[in-house]
Length: 237
Image 1 (tube, rainbow, N blue to C red):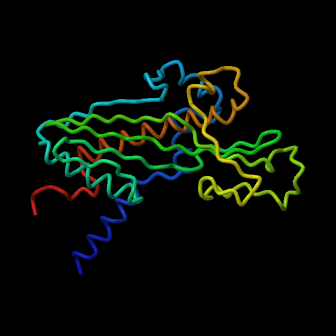
Image 2: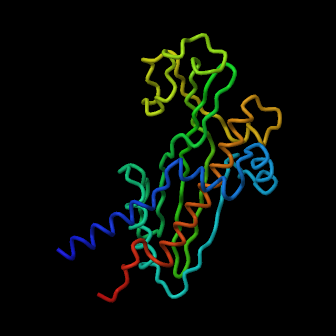
């Protein structure tokens, strides 16, 4: 019975690792404020795009005294517990010391424009390279995934009862609803990297949220590396 209770508590702790969009927004506002245009402009001064025009972050986390095997086990546990989609872990190579994760976080930004309404999601690529006593985290996002609702703008001709926005769980390329469109916006071609952007307000918040999520991911990897996930993974049992 005690073992079952401990396992249950451990599962709850692991599930708490997942950051939902609402929690991410609170985190972003606390760090950068809620004036998204200003926050995006300020962040852009310290951001660079990589050779593929992707937004990319990299950090090395030191873990003195921990072997490559220990770090691999800790990070494999963190990855499988945090990302519930069975397809999220696209590479898990123990010999190479590399774990690659691709998982979508939905609705990080929403904006109602004059004619359309937009919902933004991102699918970061998270790469964990593991060596003796250290881990390198690389976080990369190239595009915003957009669900555009042409019936959702302020001047939309559609009756409010007919508006279909909010169906952001709709499968990609599902054409059963003529008001909804899937689009991809390259980050490099939008605000704040391009000043004269018609989707400036949408992309400002999307940029800040994308940046905040990179910080959250790196913080969680560091916590898993240094302290484990549930705090009882040491060898003294």
